[in-house]
Image (cartoon, rainbow, N blue to C red):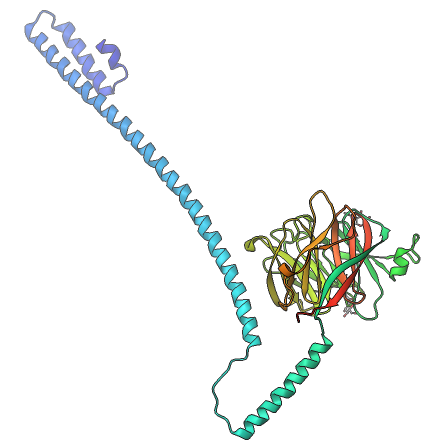
Length: 406
Ligand SMILES: *[C@@H]1O[C@H](CO)[C@@H](O)[C@H](O)[C@H]1NC(C)=O
Ligand SMILES: *[C@@H]1O[C@H](CO)[C@@H](O)[C@H](O)[C@H]1NC(C)=O
């Protein structure tokens, strides 16, 4: 019993046991030897006892270390979660701060800083005259840029042609002196087609054949526009890069990144479009949805020459269930549908001048046609909507009224 147990003990024990065995063999019958053997066996038992205690303690220490380390691991993963939460919050706060800063800047530019200055009466009069003069000038500019109009009805639908993919976009260049029609089929390509006029575009066999422009890059989505002979487009495989392309020779003349764009599609029903451009009476716009802003639509006025951001407005219009939008006179109209296709409606609008309010305006219905739009572009020159309706190129005539509340 003792000997078998001894096998898995240490070398020291083995030696002691051997010694005991030898002694016991050599000294049989001797009282003193028996005593020594008994003594040694007792010692052995004590050593064994202590060894087993040692083992027990080491097992329980290992157990404790294991428990401790798994506890630490647990804490670490909680910490990681906290850390990413904090990071997300910091990022969101910094986005808000940037937006606030932009708003402050805008307001500061709008409201000149006032200072208390004492002034001679004559000088004051002169100043008043100057201001009056300035106001008259401003009024003149406002009349020239008169934009107190609102969409009141979508009157009629004209199906013009059926060409290309189920998704795509088509539009005219709304600038003076241009009659050209552009067509970009699909959601990603490096070509666009240019037709000399709408009349030619509608012909069955187009003569002359449309010009096929090959661009030095791929574009993405259905949001592009042409304005003054320049194409404004989302460069494919980038989250938010905007290119401005001279269509005379296909060269990229400018490029910018739109802050906050590219994380989610603009309209949930058109998942390949991340930036939707628009041209209205006031100029060039881009619409995107901001994931940091509950997926609401954000509109940005771009300088058409430099692509610099003039100003950005956060709207209350949701990107969820939206299929498109267009801008008329600085008012965004968002078109909603269902993912099964159906009758499109305008259910949310946002007026940058704050004269038209979404909750006061009725839901506007598009003429009955149970499909969905992959793009809708307003043309400020002929005041019509150019839409791509399930592969059909269609034109909506709209009724625009002077905005009475303005
Ligand atoms: C790009 O457009 C051309 C002409 O419309 C078409 O033939 C081609 O298949 C398109 N390529 C892709 C990748 O969709
Ligand atoms: C493209 O055309 C524009 C305007 O005509 C011109 O300024 C530019 O230099 C041209 N670029 C190339 C590469 O030909």
